[in-house]
Image 1 (cartoon, rainbow, N blue to C red):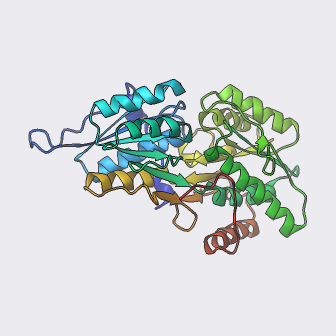
Image 2 (cartoon, helix red, strand yellow):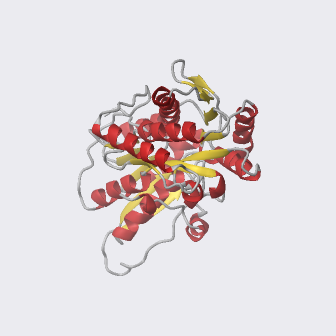
Image 3 (cartoon, rainbow, N blue to C red):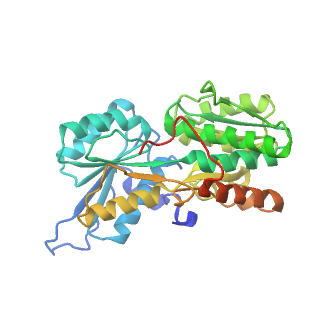
Length: 355
């Protein structure tokens, strides 16, 4: 797996898929070969969230590129009430593999999976525990721990911040790791950098209450900046774009850390992004779909859990900040990765994936 493989979904692909269905691949037209259909239901952030929905769609595109017998399409959920009908729609269309994206879809996916035990489902960021639902989860606390340490080391004000979209495990796991990384920096360096926006002990903090409202994301980060934070990590899908855009417009007053997909490859705000806590969703989705298309059974237990050790999670290159991050700090962040992968440093979160 390589970070470089995680790229934003191109404009042409999005335009072609805007009606909820990807363009048909007719390479096998007339051959009589039965296509393997992989059908995706997005969360409310939509296909162009520059985050987890876009990542999952990228994984389907890569699966199709690897096996031209795979047909892919998606339908976008406009509201949580759309989850069940959208999943059911694909069951009725007899899709071979139905992918649900996002932790909010766990209950709806479980319900439809139980009603259709012979249907193969997959889900990103949840594990409903159903035999016919293949869970793809990510221990992002590990990479977010690196990001928290980095943020603390880069902060000039001595205050950094994070906020989420909604308080669900795939969101709070980032926030837990981030504040623990700041704490580890303080412990090892004898410093007192404050992490605003999240209290790991009480599991309370700042939220935009949406994955798809940039104005709401900006409001939350404006409040954190007003409190003195000069580096902010939004864990809020498309809502976080309100923060990165404002940081870019601030002229260096504050900067950000993006999540899910390398923000320098998926957003126009690279100049304000120190790094990204990456979830390698594309590779996990691609692997699952290619295996399923090849006739391999996807085992719900253990499913897939991405870690620093298996490169399922990582931090992205520093891009525009490469010359601004001191070499010593880079080395320390790299050592943290090695120590976490080796088990020398243990990162914990109440939201860590179940296996």
